[in-house]
Image 1: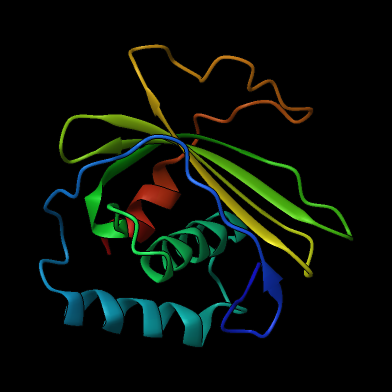
Image 2: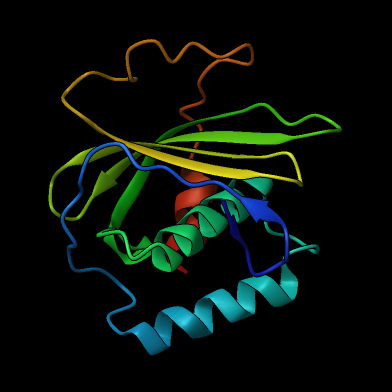
Length: 147
């Protein structure tokens, strides 16, 4: 267990190793400016999926994992299970390196968990059925990531 930036106990785990690629923004400074701006407006217009994705990559950075938000080429699909006590989002991500990964972010405001798992050519990860189902309507999310 470790303390997150918000003082909450957090648990982290990673499945698989994803190599660091190249992406846009091309510098850490540009990424930090982008994240700062998103944090500033987070309650105004940023979808919950993007907030979960940003937090997952903040966790990855804190844990010194070999993946960064700049490695994302696009979001292929998502699922969400928000409720009044927890939030959980899943993402199929296409990486600039050509690899694909399944990322899951979960928080119940006491703990936080992020998992990453490499994927092959399958559309969705095996054993990833969710009550709300998968959504391929990710155009707006990809537009936000590339802005």
